Picture 1 (tube, helix red, strand yellow):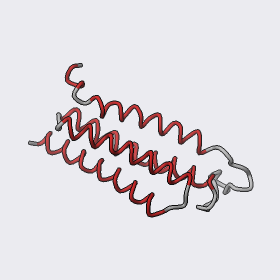
Picture 2 (cartoon, helix red, strand yellow):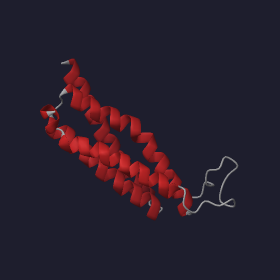
Picture 3 (tube, helix red, strand yellow):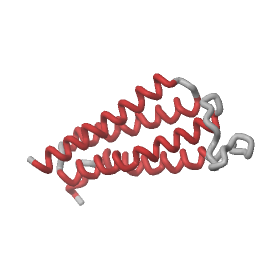
Picture 4 (cartoon, helix red, strand yellow):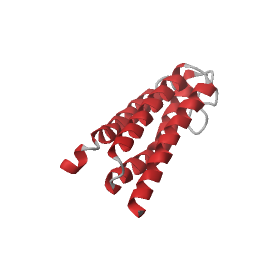
Length: 136
């Protein structure tokens, strides 16, 4: 277990990410009514409606589960530089919290896009680091 000590922030980020997704899942169901749902059960597309934005924030978080978990675990298992894996995983979490707040509380598309891009960049760099470390 001592090997994993160097990756404590990345491991904590994985745990925190699961909590964030669970909270967003619970929040995404609040305020749904028959009037604001499509036949599929999801809120009608309307960014001015906080119910729709909550659902989108949750869906967007779920879409990032696989890439974030895979890149972080791969980085840890491959032995990629702990400083960078920890930093990138932590920045990812902060960017996703910002994105969720902006997504739910505002209609600020540019800010949402910036937060999304920061998180995606972190995952992409971690994945490259993991692959590089594993191959070379």
